[in-house]
Image (cartoon, one colour):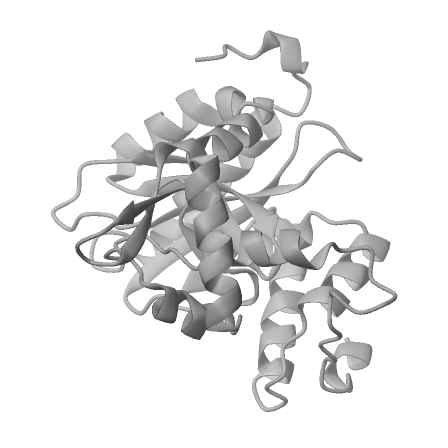
Length: 274
């Protein structure tokens, strides 16, 4: 852990420099698409430029191309843009390639219903974990996360569970990639991650008491079909008033560990796709 505590501030080299394999116009096109967030109203070119840092003149050309390709639609009255259903094809192709979703789904539903909780499977994307499967039990307080939602890898049980499932070399490489610029916060987060990894080693799961969202208790475990394949984070969480810390440790944690381990010997072809 000492290595991480004394890391220098991360560098942010340009991905479009002379030595980069990235095609700048293509990268900017994806930046524009990523500028649209859940719940957004239509965005004007100025809004997109502000969010992406891309010059307005370039944004105008990119949005025009994305309209022509069918990924954006232009509202002439508002002079603004919205995503079209065409963008869903990328996500659906990705989700369809994760057999673990189908293997875990029945158990996730059962756990969510039993504890009126939210049970979710997440995959890493940069410094975030993205929900790829989610089951929600009946709760007086609606769960606001769903497939496609994101949470920070460094401050969530889903992220901690994922990190705990990595081999040492991959863990070190991943930590180097996701380290943050805030030197004051970094040591605290590293200690939480190391504690979570130790908890997973000793009892199979880690616990978050409001680490990501105040008033929400969550258990996290690593999930994968077999060693050496992709690692995911599997969580079960609920408001603190409905799920005590004791329940997390004595009931939810062991059940989540069992669920994650129950699919490790299954072949992808055995999954009930649907």
